[in-house]
Length: 149
Image (cartoon, rainbow, N blue to C red):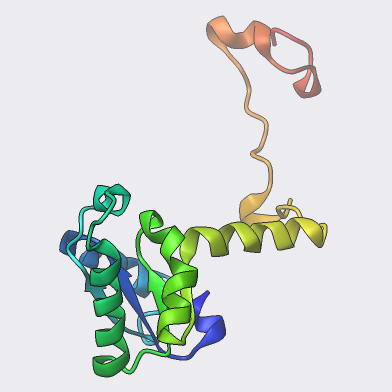
């Protein structure tokens, strides 16, 4: 979604061990060329729930570094545990901070409102009927022929 609101973006996630998986997905979905960098704040997810934790400040520091060092025009939060911070961080830094979970839900809602459903052709077509045999033969749907055959 960040590619819809800015050309260049950085991802800010929690733990460093997530970086390679996120970079793999960026390449897989062909966003690697638009992502300036994947950054980790090295904050365990549960720290977001601790009152008085410095988690917000550490994420904010990574965003500031992304703006200055990566020339990021938008930020994607790389952890669903950060979702509650997106709006506040966006206001603080003056650029879009996208929560991927919220963006995906709104995208799905938009498709439903437009009346779109999953395609029934090609890769999303219903699987072909398969014959039931052995002990399962009695459960063959009637649309496939006579039960039990």
